[in-house]
Image (cartoon, rainbow, N blue to C red; front, side, top):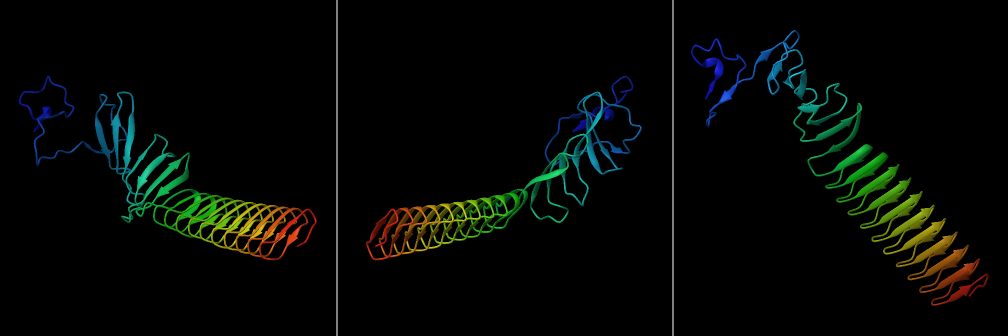
Length: 261
């Protein structure tokens, strides 16, 4: 390995350090000093600036920062005005990648595979939190929107003030809650409490195992019960209530449109 500046009788040659015949177990050093006042070198030239401990390269017109190596921030690749960057670690070897655009942190990738964007918190392995005030705690969980929480394994919470606490549960909309395993709550003010329960619409609640409530102000309490429509209630096991203001309370009972059974 040699530099052209090492060649004998090279007064007529360009003095820029050009690396040639790089072998194994050999290292070289780019120019080191203070960049202020340095002339612009030919495109491809590099320089280590002691002022900000950063590496610069020349495009033939200007010196451009390539890597920021400030210890407090960790090594970064950033743009010319330093407001957009990708940084690794924070000086503490925490194996985290932080992405910033226009001076705002847009996302972080953690060593356990958790990823969050915005002002969310991803704590679970391979979890994802996106939005404002979101929290993904469970393994492979996903929280998105505003003040959403996904706690259990493979849980999904999306919208505003939604919570998914059951394994494989899904809460979507506004102020919805999916508590049971494989439960689904969707809409506004809906709750799916039991395993494999489903609540959809507005102010609907499913508390029975495999129960289903859908519509407005409907409630399914019994196991495998079904409540659909407006202000309907299904209390008994395998009961069915449908329409407007209907109520079924016995096992396998059926009520439709203002009827009670």
